[in-house]
Length: 401
Length: 77
Image 1 (tube, rainbow over the protein chains, first blue to last red):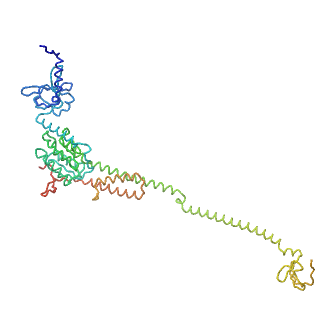
Image 2: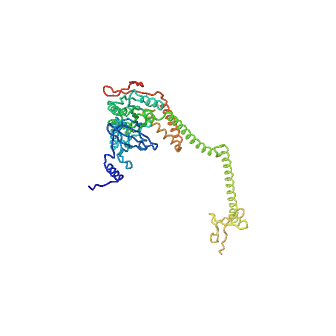
Image 3: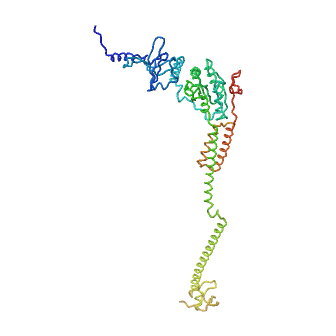
């Protein structure tokens, strides 16, 4: 017999390899009862899962343990999820627990995760599918139980913040088998009759079973298909439902949904006031600018004292008139002077002046000036003009030159 | 609010008017008209907000399927 002899570590590693190669053991759900639950100072949780016959050691590291939504206690029935592997130092296999949930709702949890993954893959949670909420909703449909605290909280907060919005309650059951079809019906009805411009649907906090209607696929699809934007408001802060993922906006609580749904009318009044102030200031500025421009114009003399302006103009006119008159007079004087000179020159050339020196001018009776003796006949009458007076003479004799 | 003008439209118009006025390049008479319109809208929006009484109704389906509004008492069953 030639059997292989392993070292301890070697064998442990071999077993580890074997376990690690099993895909099912890498992601396994296991149901059991908690025992020997210990939280170490490191923050890691160590416990044993057991049933009637067997036990399984398990560890949950600090990071995963911090996400626990309940307080694990010994004796509690749970469903743990994780991978099984070997810790070679101890030669012990154990469950490295990633998630732990109380049993009974364990199946619901699994269903939840599966539906969430399915709808996520279908794109029902896509950001770009989210419809914008109306800024100032006028009619808000509230789809919830008419009896719960949720409806009272929503009405109270809406009334306080924005009483001008009308609240339209569509009463539905929010738990039990009838709840999902009623919620779906109300969402579709609100859309069909366009009863509102915003829908809030949800309920107050409760156990996972209580909230289950909001993890229903039909409800999720109705929310997705709603033309009217939907705010989901289910339970308390840490409760997240499928409805929350698919809604256009998720509110942590019903009160929070009402806060997110409407603006605060006190703030709006402030906004209106500030707009009024801005408008007045803008107009004042505009008027001031125009007044400044007017003042600049008014500084001019014509606007400041129109009579003075007219007086100025009149003085100018007088001045121009005087100037014109004297210019005209000067022109006349110059012309007169030239005329006198010309007249003197003309006078010097006048034949009368020649006669004045003792000459006389002989003319025929027709006025023709006689220049040669041949111009006249003997016996012809001629006129003789002297410097002073004239003579009528008869030609007695001609002496040709 | 004018029948055809929602609060949202009025608020949007108001924003626009204030911006136009603040830009200050419109003629004065246009600006005065804008200012008047703005003041009217502010008053109307204010009145809308001051409608203090919150209306809460319960919607029921009539026999023909049409919605009927009923008074809603908080805490009713």
